[in-house]
Length: 246
Ligand code: SF4
Image (cartoon, rainbow, N blue to C red; front, side, top):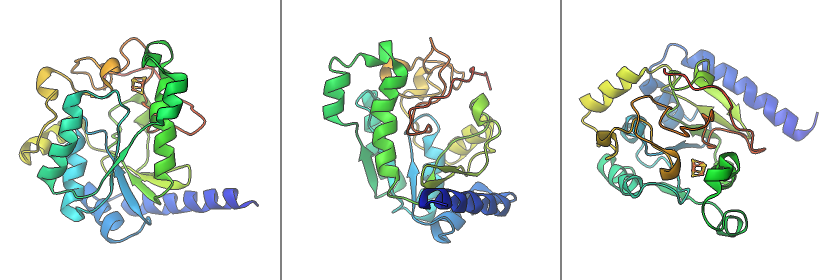
């Protein structure tokens, strides 16, 4: 058995053990195990700083405010999002922002006029999201996400822990509903992304986002694409699962 296969099997076993251990735990308890108990190795959290991002970041800030927060600056974000990154980090007392950007050289070669998103969104996401993110996430053993089962059809059956590349991906909010998330944001009085008040319930890159109260209908509105690239694999495979309303 080669090293990569062996490593993959070990990660799979660890993921299975953690899924059993996390089955009866709350999101806060899962984060305790990961951030303070070290059960999954070196952690980081990835955040889009979108409409619901403050919920997971608040829980993390309460456990360990030095946790690295990885933000992917695709160079296509709303300026409101870039402002929100700094404001939310400050308000929550999070100290470690890892800002990831696509390669300027590759963009100059493949997207010189910045319009690739309009002709090949998969390739655009691959260049601006997948490639730069994979390079950084390899520095960690465990990547926390705010993904939830209710958000898309392909997330409906996801575990608390799965394996991605050479790290574990942990989804502490997997079983949170939309209402539960909104209630938490409200009860904690968390700073909201400014575009939420303008009707955006899911916020990504500016060219690919429209106002909508349906979580994913506001993203890639003219396509059946549902995943942005942070959550896909290095070979560029992008989810092609029909959007759902819940
Ligand atoms: S969401 Fe749109 S602009 Fe952003 S990387 Fe993907 S295709 Fe490009």
